[in-house]
Every structure is written in structure tokens, then in C-alpha cells.
Image 1 (cartoon, rainbow, N blue to C red):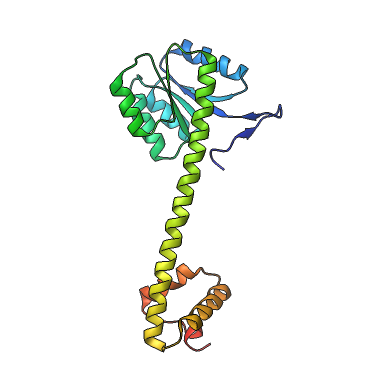
Image 2 (cartoon, rainbow, N blue to C red):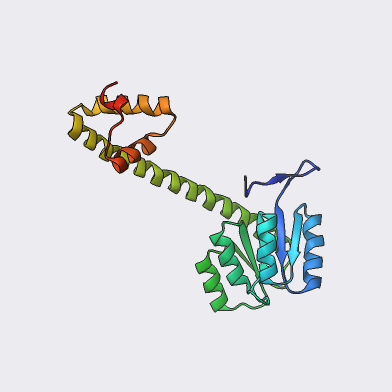
Length: 209
């Protein structure tokens, strides 16, 4: 499952990290420091466009993104990563710029770090970003499940009303017959309800079982 922590060969939980920074020495030093701390650095890029392409391919848990990069800046990159649900983002910048911070907040940055940084700060930022990303992902999944549940109940209610109008069966009897039909034909109640509403017809097994 995307976003899960990968189990390393050393028996430790590793977070898979991608580095996007236009300065080679910064990428090199960061990679060495992170690997010493037990992170798995799976890729790197020197500009935003290259980073986006590689992140799509590699699917890291956390991307460390420098805000000032050629071809596509870090803010635009982070926005695209968010839209594609491609893991957490830690922003890096050498400038404590209010405008950058506000834009990063609007995008939904999981963590933000100023250069020069200490490795302890970077480690904390990565861990924080990953935990926030996981929490946010769980929340989105719960919201999706809730929306689907509401849609199912709404479709089921409307389908029952249609069947009542056509057959004069009780709601309890209709629900029982719809459940039996959905189980027998291996379709969900939502799919059955939507089929009835779309075709304006009732399966014979529901009308006359």
C-alpha cells in the first residue's frame, strides 16, 4: 500500500525519501546524513520537472523539496504531488520569506525547514511530515467511506420508494428481497438501487420471488 513504511533488511522501519534540490553538494550531503540516520534515499533530482517525473516512478513516502528550483519551483511541485497523492513533502528554503510560507501553507505543506539545517531538525521534519501525511490519508479515506455510505443510503431509499409505488410491497419486504437479489447476483445494494433507478424497472426476482 502506498505510503506504508518499508521494512528494511536490518529489521528497522525505513521511510523512503526522495531529495529534490538544484545544488549537487546539498543533495550529496543530505543523502549521506539521512542514510546514517536509517532513512532509505531512493532517488534525487536537480529540478522540479525531473523530480515530478521521478517521484511518480519511485513513489517515495516523503519528498524533501527545495522551494527555489529551475523549470518548476518547489511550491508548484508540491502542489502537483498533493493532487496526485504522492506522499508527504518537507519544504527546504534558504529564505524566511512570508509569501513562501503562506503559499506553502495553502498547498498543505506537511513540514517546513530553513537552510542551513541540523540533521536532527531534518530527521524530525521528515518524521512529522510522514505522520501528518498518514493521518491526513486516513481522514480522507474515512470521509470517502462516509460519502459512499450516504450515497448508498440515498440510492437505496429512492429505489425502495419506486418499488413501493410499483408493487405496494412493504419496505421491510422490499429490503429483504433486494438483499437476497444482491447476494445471489453478487452486486452491491448501491449498484442494484442505481440499476433500478436508471432503467426504471424492477427485477422479476424482487417483484415475484
